[in-house]
Length: 240
Image (cartoon, rainbow, N blue to C red):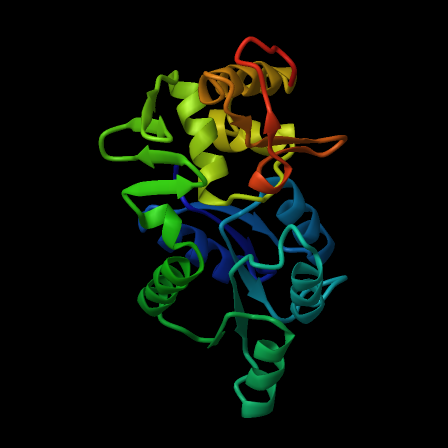
């Protein structure tokens, strides 16, 4: 799964340069030039990192950063602030607001990419790991194998991708739309109820033998992988 970066920048020339360089580096990008639209995109598309301009129409980068850090679902989202403000007090203000890094325009695209990669390594080391683990579930990304309590679990390709999303960020609640975007891709039309079908299949495979259910259904919100809410789950159950 490609790393998704949301670019929030209202300068057309800079936006074009950012999209070109990040796409060339292998990242998937989404672009918006408006602060209010940025908040919606962050909540709807769950990017892996945000590149955020300080000065924006309607809602400033500083205020967007505050809202990101105030929201439980996005508070750990990596943010790099871009700005023409290079004085020390401005840097301090940006970092104190919650930005993880701060770059002053004009900047080197190569340096920005290096900082993005470093920040992603620090913020989400699980995505770079060969093996993902949570509770008694283990996923070997190289061998494409899943086990629970040491016992192999057979999963279809879609269920494997679905479980990987959960394992990379345990405890995070994903809506059906977010799971469709991450597992099936944003360019493929699939009905949201399809997610429920594959969640049932994933649960049935993981919970074989009467093991506890680690997939939490959050009413009106979606699903998460969370051992705090685990319960006994019969292997034949079809509930989502």
